[in-house]
Length: 461
Image (cartoon, rainbow, N blue to C red; front, top):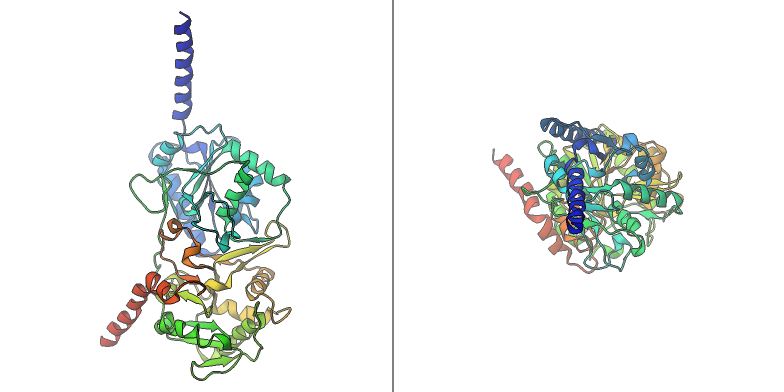
């Protein structure tokens, strides 16, 4: 009889656990979409919000709570997630799971509920698609310990208890005044807490590319319209005399031949390329005054060339796709104040912080915005960091930088292969320890060759 009694208690406990886990519904979830202010990204985020809600209604459930990060948590560093924790923790009392997703994330709600039902939400746990660095990399501060961090495009799910705990930890922690580079890595590092916290739990239904079993996955970039006219994009390449014979030939042999308008700006005039002298001595770093001279150069020519709509400012060791760039810019309006690239942050956890576009992956400015920058932005010294100074100027103008995960400050080998395989990337940076021609041929050459084919077809017609 004693064994029967014990068995009965165990059976009741199992049944109760099954009932609790089996009752998870859409209303038990809170979604936070990492949104941005500009028209396109806001439209994409709102469409995602509507889609998730409609999926809930289709299975006769209430719509889950869904927030856009830039509206509900308007912090300059909200994209790093950590500054949002306190705000999220105060409004999720009745939520079982908190889902943090990007605007490009696709959610299959029924599958997601099935996935989350497999886990005990009363524990400190977080789920996602695990990425890891194959070796220490500059974008993660050469962190030597191998641990996993999430693919934000696939989304992450955080249990309510864990979110409350990490929120308290963050509130009591000293805020960094350093650089923010990769929000997903830095979030994972914080939660992991040098091995004293919680590692990410990998779940294969959080996907990097679509398959039928996915609960979530990121969409791949597609042009919004046909590619914009090639003569509407002016490419400006920053260089200096010591790289005229090493880096410039690579640019000319790869992506430059698919441009219609490209200018090389250097500390000296060199008719063999040719270069335009900015009449500023070369500096080993920073290059702020050189960059501002370039922006002013184009601004002075706006009145003479109505075709100019976009300025792409690249380094002489930037490797990019002209076709993908033109497709990407078809999604934006050059009559808006637009600054696009890979967003980094400086001191974003404090009131004096700001975001900026890191220069190596290229910086893109609309015609309208470039005029404002040329007329108002000034360099403290000629060697000040140009990308950071421009970011500070944009902040002073009240203009938000637009982040795109398609632009990259580092080399392909500096990123997790699973991160790169899920999209059509636009740029990489640096020739160090790689063959830049091979990088271009692997990632961009096939699509860029279509630029010449398309142009030839139009000429034949």
